[in-house]
Length: 114
Length: 114
Image (cartoon, rainbow over all chains, first blue to last red; front, top):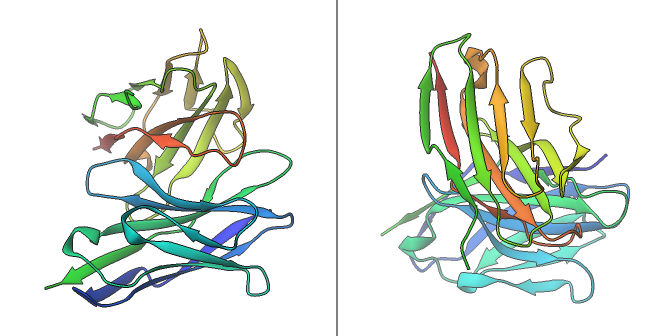
């Protein structure tokens, strides 16, 4: 079985500050890991994904995430927050082998204060 | 490239009524997914199709939910009869076949059951 835990259902930062959204996963097999963003009344949009290879993954809108196998983590960061980053962020895990059910975390609502 | 289309965007019904949602995936995407997203939670997979065959429906409440993808393209999800706890956003997504591939999400249908 696979699961995702996102620490902090709400995160608030000031504009220009570092964004750090935490994600820990559990998987019995090597995982594929994803971060999605959801703006109000919209579907989910992929920010970035880790499949194989380089553990530091860069995504759209200046976000990046680092896969740390020893810590079973895939935290999302952005050096400087913009007002437009305010949204809900979901971490998700999929299995490399044996199927393709994407399991999502509960989400983290990011607020950016001026 | 056109995205995943869903209709209707909003639906309000009374409990014990029936409702149907429609999804048209991105052209060429063999895999289609229906997710249920309850307020404050991450999306939960209800059913996954590969072309017109069901790959995973283990989390679909089959006593009231049904889905079909007859020609391997668009799909419908039906609830009959609806319960209060079915109030949620129903998201459709599509992807190429492999589990590391990005899932592209539609805008969702927000269902309110009164």
